Amino acid sequence: MTNYILSIDQGTTSSRALLVSDSGKVVFTAQQEFRQIFPHEGWVEHDAEEIWKTTLDVSRQAVAHAREKGGTVLGIGITNQRETTIVWDRETGEPIYNAIVWQDRRTAHECAVFKEQGFEQSVTQKTGLLLDPYFSGTKLRWILQNVEKAEALADQGRLAFGTVDSFLIWRLTAGLRHMTDATNASRTLMFNIHTQQWDDDLLNMLSVPASCLPTVADSADDYGLTDAKWFDQEIPICGVAGDQQAALFGQCCFSPGMIKSTYGTGCFMMMNTGDHALESSSRLLTTVASRLNGEVTYALEGSIFIAGAAIQWLRDEITLLDDAAKSEGMASSLDHNNSVYMVPAFTGLGAPHWDPSARGAIFGLTRDTGKPQLVRSALESIGYQTHDVFSAMKEDGGQLARLRIDGGMSTNSWFCQFLANLLDTPIDRPSTTEATALGAAYLAGLRLGVFESTEQLEQNWQLDRSFAVDMERSEREKLLANWERAVRAVTLFSSG
Image 1 (tube, rainbow, N blue to C red):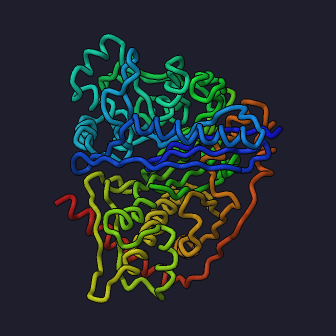
Image 2: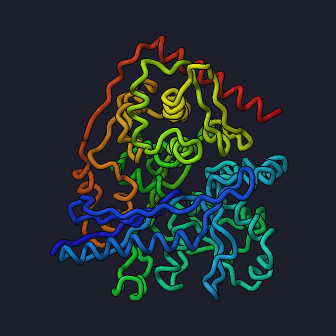
Image 3: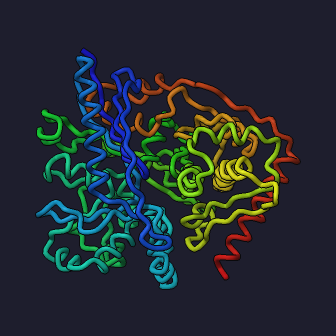
């Protein structure tokens, strides 16, 4: 009989369930997309019930597949889109408002006010974060202050706040567990990453009652049993991590200095800094990479809000291509980029710029600009944004000799080569690019005893292909200079 771990990967545009064998191989994947809701400019929401229904459906498919193969699901690991905020009524179990997505910028003004009042230094010292609408705290504040009866329900202790992992745990355990892990907690603006506790001063700043917050556990821990009605059996939930921390774990970046970059809806570069919470001088984020047996590993992170979402926009909104996979062929059909630059600041600019008011733009359009040029400019923009974060990490003292990449876009070999050329650094792509799902499964497997140690997990990492640098320095400098001009133009426009 084969033993499996069910890895739930609840992302920004889809919910996925993967079966990972006890040898660390992904043997089954089910996926469902769900709606993206844009009520106003800069607002991004999800229907929390759609998140739940799609997650439950793909998870049931995975469990059914395991049974068809004569196997057993030993436990569940959960990884999730971070910062996305859900508030629900403890008595009814129903969300009181749509999930406010990490990309949402509606609280930009509140963040600016907090900065003017001098809060940012204290916030950064305690949380490792910046005062930006990206994080959960101001989203929760907005719901409490703007949704009818929310404050009254909160005063009664009836409201529960959670990032997506907490909401799924609540639903899967039929309301018996209200929990999150330290990595997700570290993205809320309310959690002190040094004391590993919710911080009263931050809660007071945000006017958030402590009664609505989940219990914070280790990344590999006891999160309860699923109610038998969901899978016709009880399954322990025993591994939880935010998607980027899960990817760092899945890429086996267990030693300080190891670095990965994940390309999904956004792009997130993360470097393991060990037990030292490195304070960035380049406006990068200090965050919890994992917490195992009470021991915290920290990381330095650069967040890019729009990566694969730029290609999705070209596919779904502009209809320049009907399949994201075709972007590789379209980009490689050109000898150069025809001086077309896209700055995909659809929801502001992330690290290291942190400009929530920035909006997207395309520069260098001419009469001969066509679909291939626009698609290539979108792919290149992701490389340029990665370069900005990569340079910031170097300024913060990172020794960045090689980069491990994963996520959907990492299968695009043209993009991987362009990235290596732009960063002037070799790129390593693993044989399994499902690092996020693997990380959640690895955490659950450590708790279950399926995997004995991180040393054992390191043996599972296998290289698919390395991409060496083959671009002249002069060409790289020219491309980057034009990108910098494009970003300056966008930020000047937003400030005007």
